[in-house]
Length: 426
Ligand code: GUN
Ligand code: FE
Image (cartoon, rainbow, N blue to C red; front, side, top):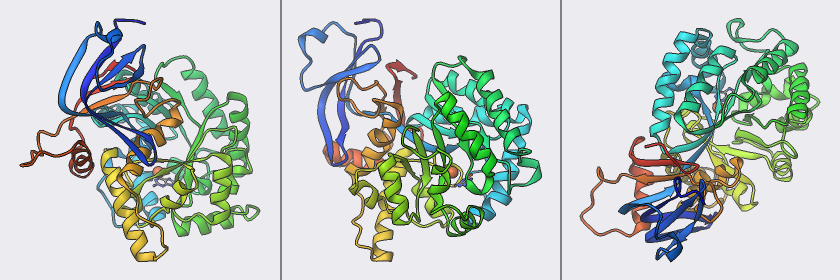
């Protein structure tokens, strides 16, 4: 054991054992050795007595959170033009803003603001979309590396149905740009990894998807994209890929939909049953983004259905479809959206529980990164010490009560201490 990086954290410790079970150890000890958890204990075993102890008695200690879907360049315009649905919002809001990242100076300024806030937030792991620009994407990767967070970053690929000012020339040019990006960044980072990022089927020609499939097989990269978010979008995919059985089949056709390929699909609001079945078979991760579902009037993803089939589900902020970085808030909103869905559709799907959403924001999404999102022995040591000082309460609350209200009440930067892979960021 490396005693320099070993530490013991004392506090009110909460983590998911699985989607239905929350482990709560009041006044417990969490041990970190070599960047991994050595377990949680009621009393500190003799063998760990020599390790430096950080005493956060009375404070909540939870695993770091994973944001499975976030658009870094959209952070600057969150909260603008929120009265539009997806396709109009992309054209009038997202695309013009993303075009600014052709200017590396603007990119550095805007991405610095974003990464500063992400570093202070409860997120320890994130899967990010950048833009199609190489210099700006590398600036984002540099800033994330300095932040100490562990991330996947995608240079976005898009070569059709977008404005001239934000479109790659054709599938071959777009594929060449991905290869250049991989070559330029190879071996440059310890905590930032590349992920293939076709924006969504409407913005990616068949030739581009074919080439990304080849690049995936050669470089063994994971994939992230959007799926079945909005009814107009889905109808458009039907026109653009008439040969596909359903939207997700248009990714699968090119070998970019799970199986051997670790894949995240954001939203999955309106998936037909065949699509759900294919995602289940192929272990595709679903990034549920409840705030974006509401803001862009997309609907409400049937998350209960996914969880009941033991599918892989995590949470995403979908900045700027969502306006809030905090995945604690995404947990609360996932519950709220599931309640509205149940009442309004009468589909009989039960609302999500706190255990389930906490699991999604920690272990559910974290597992995309390996053994991440839990304090069980062997998991990478990502931890948060939470600040409840701004929400004092007149009664003595249980640890579970405190955690539940923290999901609903916390601000984005109410984190006292943050650890990633055993490293203390602050
Ligand atoms: N589909 C394609 N691009 C986007 C995007 O930037 N945000 C969201 N929410 N959906 C998309
Ligand atoms: Fe998105």
